View 1: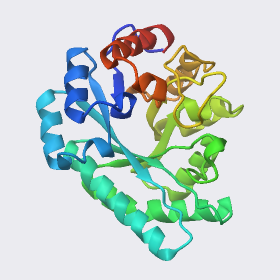
View 2: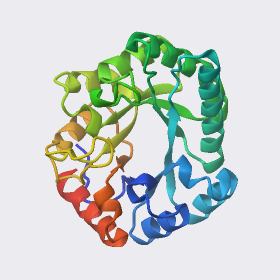
View 3: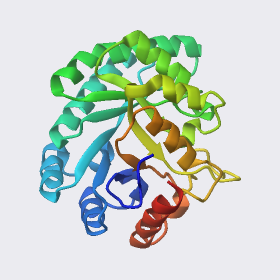
View 4: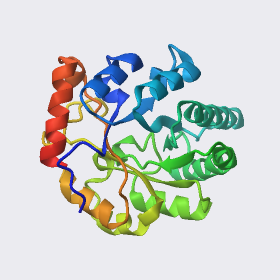
Length: 273
């Protein structure tokens, strides 16, 4: 297992520090010795992807991925085409900021069976994968916890994501393993081993008990019940040796002093990851 007593593989999502602008995230992570950054698309919006890419390149930070694409299902043909068009833009944005990966939140459409949404997800990924390959950008299918199956993701287990990636069978399409969404799954260890080289990214945080909000009450590692280090071991035994990405959605933590919160994340990374 890799030695993580340093921060050489630490990446932080800009969404973890939602109150900060991209410029503030860049400055804070650089000053704190955090070498990796995953950028959320709304952090690109104020200055645009081209200027954002210049800021990131000048900073020396490693751009790990862009979040997020996906949300392919729709009850209408027009809605599905709009999603494809938006994903093509996300791929272009990733290329402009130097991100080698776009993470896909698959999506779901209330009013149709989950099976239909899954078919539309595969159709959407197939439609954009050639553009991703031409741009040098990979696509990571991220299964979300079943509590999001109604409208955010019809892909809820790593088995489903593995099946989907296998059926699409494109060299630029793989999976993203997020402990928040997958920690509960009794098949997780085996499905991580099955995913192997298709694992494109690994996200960490913690599951708080009780969870007060299904979207915005994640914990920093060590604040909840997820065995993050154990899952990291499974991922690394499967061959993944990439960035460890901290992704925390938390109304509570967003209201805190952000520099102090960043230091707590670093210490939690050393202690629990």
